[in-house]
Length: 79
Image (cartoon, rainbow, N blue to C red; front, side, top):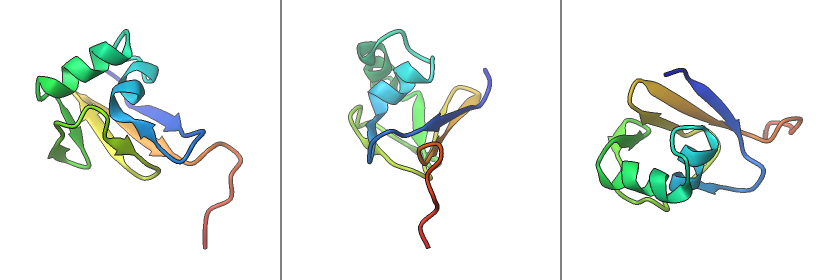
């Protein structure tokens, strides 16, 4: 699997939906199943909350792939 960059459009995205939108699950329910099975980490730690709010700067790992969560395209970094 390849690494994925995901640009948020809101303040956060729920983990199960992120897994779906990144292409690692066919649905939000499928994303939830991956989390419940213990197959997902967030920032290097096992994550069991399928609706965990994932924000800019966090890294989600599933299998050999990572999802880098980035700010919306065209946004300015906060100083």
